[in-house]
Picture 1 (cartoon, rainbow, N blue to C red):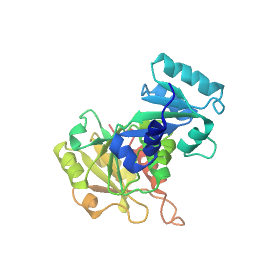
Picture 2: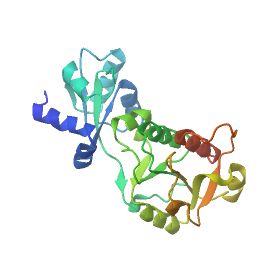
Picture 3: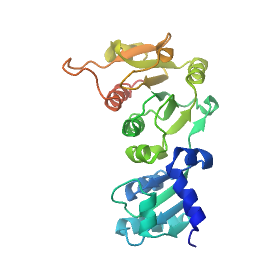
Length: 260
């Protein structure tokens, strides 16, 4: 059954932060992303496709979603382009429910490693950090401050499908700090003046950890870096003043991957 223009207008609103927040929906586009959603058993509420743009791989994906009773709607290539955030749309778009949780009550005691993103405004960096978090066993992500909207098209695309597997909690810094204290988690704060990685790894062995990374321009807030946080740094050649936050965060997560 075709969608109405009002329905299309509603879906288009998911491209905006206000629309996503109001309706708790977001858009993921492209064959690769939707294949990942299928692989992780996170099915869209609806799939829109253009017959003239979709390829054989996309058609196979549509068949798989149909088997899972996901509503499939054909729309024009022009409408697909209006909903797309890429220069060359692949002709398939999924509408998903937002899984972001607000409030520390959603914390799972089974989680041993958490990534905390504070004031990271670049969508590409946020998406890369989410992808690395999944790769290195950080199965929950705290988000605070002016961090880019997790469900914006650019962030979703940069996660390369990890958005469908990690648990995301958005809250105020003071609430997250209360959770860390309540759950007896060890807070590690990435800082160029911190202790070397190898030293900190020994110090936090067997601890449940929260690794906090902040903006490239200003780093983490003093509120996060205050005691009892342990500051940690990456040693690198002094010819480079600092590392990109996505690179630094990924290196640190990799280093702490085997801390159990």
